[in-house]
Image (cartoon, rainbow, N blue to C red; front, side, top):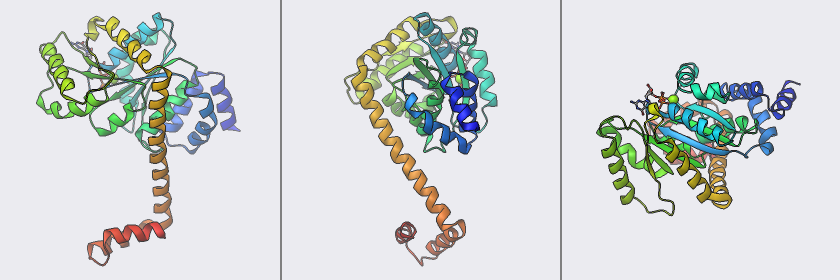
Length: 308
Ligand SMILES: Nc1nc2c(ncn2[C@@H]2O[C@H](COP(=O)(O)OP(=O)(O)OP(=O)(O)O)[C@@H](O)[C@H]2O)c(=O)[nH]1
Ligand SMILES: [Mg+2]
């Protein structure tokens, strides 16, 4: 049987089988769920580093340099670039390939994938993609996601250490976003420090952090120029500090909360789908019309649908 063969290959750490499973997840193929159920007990062993930030901030360039540092320190690394917006990963693959030339030379597993979140939300789907990659047995998984809205913040929640990249010169419109994004960053990076405004941005972020909720772990702000390989000693050092700070206890607590959240979302999504199928689109439409005509209140309609 094909599924068993795939699982067998995955257990032999075959990179092609990992790529295949990632495609199955992307394509929403039913076999993806079957395989994921069977491999779950062999996953969860890598340390997950999430990297997010606005489009073009230098995320891939940074991931590439970080991966090189990690390899130098005798880690084994896999890289996933998750695009939550595009149904096709083709375009992203090209850009990521060019930016991650060091990693390619080092033979690191890199895949760009599209995640539409059909397996119980974006976070859960990304988590499953990480699980696929974890079958390679590497001790670090880096996940790059473009951070432009709420859904992307959700993706980052799968990470043990989350790094948020900011760049100078994006204007005030990103200001509002920053508050939310700062909340999730264990480490903040001001990249493109060769450009004007980097110091001012770093100061601004520092001030915003001091105004926010005070936590035990104080998110450090690191300044980098990825195109000149500047600031990466410090960044790698901060990642290790955060990893040490978490230790096993805090890391497991964080993971427990995420699994709880994902489970609720997945159950919700499955029940929703089940109900919609059970009731049928036609009935749903009828109900909507009744609500519009004030024949039935929306709250009553919900109760009736759930009971049906
Ligand atoms: N001047 C300058 N340019 C940089 C720096 N870091 C990255 N870049 C450039 O910024 C552009 C985008 O870099 P990427 O690494 O592809 O950025 P990204 O955030 O991964 O982009 P998306 O995945 O498309 O959102 C490239 O042309 C990089 O060479 C930097 O520190 N300074
Ligand atoms: Mg990129």
